[in-house]
Length: 139
Image (cartoon, one colour):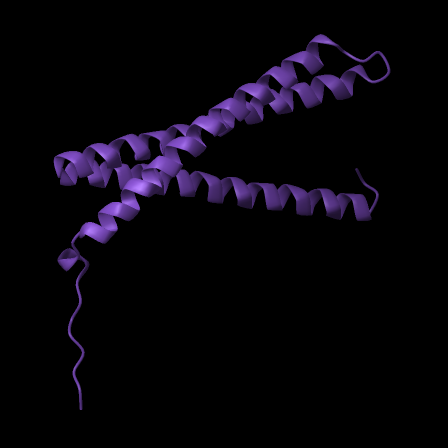
């Protein structure tokens, strides 16, 4: 009967292949973070322009949509910032062989995914609520 070795995460090491993957991931994370900031700016400007050109047919709707656009734009800046911090810190960690920076970068990556996961759950709950109220005609 074979015995399995007791494996501990503390025995893991970042080898050359892992370093290459992390470097490439950092490049993509930086690209996506910058692109995310651009989208945040576009959404914020779209919301501001909707607010500036209030439609006389439905002024309450345009105000609500513009505030929603601007709020989502500001809110989405947070995961973009986490992702940019991940990219910068993992690059520094790999250049300087610094475990502290690597840990901080991975914490930022975790925060990015945690934020996006919670936002996805909230979005699904809101969509489900809207569908529920729409089906029963109470909205």
